[in-house]
Amino acid sequence: MAEVIDVSVVLSPSTATWGSEPVPVIERVSSIEAGDGFNLSRLALGVHTGTHIDAPSHLIDGAASVESLPLEALIGPVLVVDARNVAEEIDAELVERELSEGCERVLFATRSSELWDEVGFRSDFVGISPQAASLLVERGARLVGIDYLSVGELDTHRELLSHGVVLLEGLDLRGIEAGRYRLICLPLRIVGADGAPTRAVLTAL
Ligand SMILES: [Zn+2]
Image 1 (spheres, protein in one colour):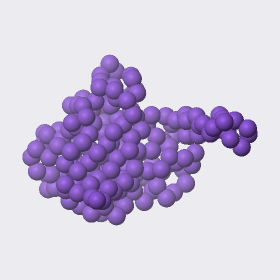
Image 2: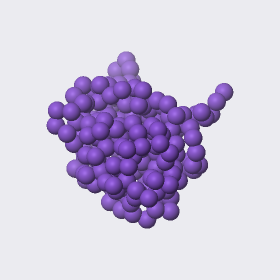
Image 3: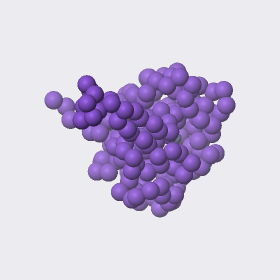
C-alpha cells in the first residue's frame, strides 16, 4: 500500500492559534460515563485554526468562499520546496530559482514547522514576500502552502487571493524532503466561510 504522509497538525485545546483567533473548544455534551447512551462532542473553533485553507473572501469582501473552491486546485501534483534556511521571508529570488513555469501547487517547508512545539502563538514565523507572491501568480500557482499559521503579511494574502490562489496554512512539514508528491487537501465545506480546517496529506506521485 502506498505510504500516506500526514502533514496536518492535531487539533486540541492547546493548539496554538493566531492572536485574535479563539482557542479550540472540544467538549462532551453527552457521555456514557454520565449515563447517556453514547458519547457526543461539540467543537467550537475559528475557521483559521490549525491546518486550514484561506478562501478569497478572507481578504476580499464578496469574493469566493470555502464551499465553492475548485477541488482541482486542492488535489494533484505538488512541489515541496526546502526553505528551511530562510531566516525571515521567502523572497522572489527563491521562487525564481525553485519554481518552474506551470507548477500549480507548491508547499514551502520552513523552520516554522518547529514552532508547533512551542506553547502559544509565535509571531517569528517565516512568511512569503508580496513580490514572491506576484511571481507565484505569474508562474501559474493555484495553491500555495506553508507551515505555521500564515503565508505572510496582508499584501501577500491579497496578491494571492485576488488571483484565486488557494492558501494552505498551518502545515507541519518536519521531515518532509524537497521534491514532488501528490497532495490531497479537503477543507470542510462551510457555506460562506473565509477559511476552513482541513486534513492535508502527501503521497508519492
Ligand atoms: Zn488563514
